[in-house]
Length: 82
Image (tube, rainbow, N blue to C red; front, side, top):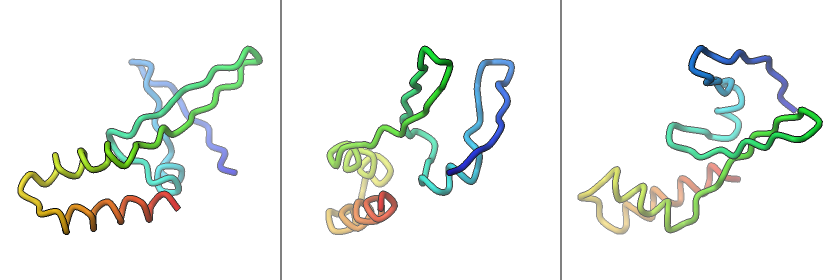
């Protein structure tokens, strides 16, 4: 379990602590779901992308990439999920 105290910024933003970003391989553009319980508990869940969405992301990053390289990138992404 990771427990950190965070502060809400002027624009209502929070920063996910580095230790959590590293553990869950979070990066800019990842989608998170915020769950607010009636008890006041707030939970943040990572929304995983589908394989198709990951292919699209890789294709956008490397417009001239060949298919073999694309699948290598997807394989790297899958390794992060384990």
